[in-house]
Image: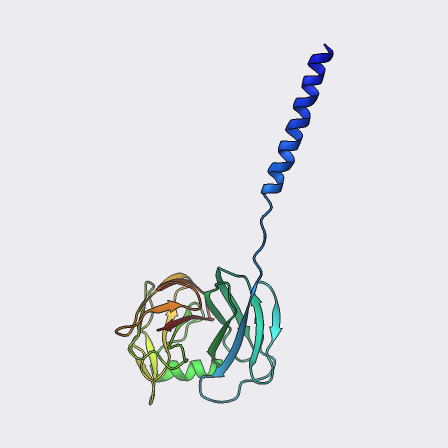
Length: 227
C-alpha cells in the first residue's frame, strides 16, 4: 500500500510540473509599437486650423501649429488613424505597418472644400455614403503620374486633381490621388495599376492591393508608394 501511495504522489507531482511548463510556453511577447510621423496639408494650399486631433488604437495626440506630430501604432498590421477637427471631414488614414517607424503626408479637407469639389463635378453629396481617397506617390512624395486605381464597390465616378481643378479620371496626373465619391459603407478592395516599370505597394509594408473600411459621411485615405 505504501508503495502504491508513493507512486500516486509521484505521478501527481510530475503532472503538476508538466502543467506549469505548458503555461510558460503560452506566454507571447507583444511586439513593440512603431511611430507614425504625420504631416497634414490643406487641399487648397491654405493654412489648417490648430487643435487637429489624431487617434490610433494606442493613443490620442493633438498636432502642433504646423499640423504635424507623431503617434504610436501597432506593428505588423493594418492601422487606421482617425483625424478630426471642427468644420473638417473626419479622415481615416490607413496603411500596413512593418517593424520600422514611418511617415505619412496627407491632405486634410474641410466640409466646404468637399462641397466645392462635388459642385464642380455636379455630384450629389450623401451623408449615407463615404469617400475613398487613394494616395499614389513616388518615394519623394511627388505624384505617381500614370498610376491608376480601381475599387470593387459602387461609386459615382473616380476623380483626380488637375492644374485646372478636378476632373473625372482614375489615373493620376498633376495631383497625387484618385478619389471615389459616394461609396457605400463597408469593406472595399483597392486595385492599383502602377506606371510602367514600377510597383505600387500599400504603405509602408503592405502588398499591391488593399481592403479598407468605408464609413458614412467620412473619408478613408489609403496610401500607396510607387517605386
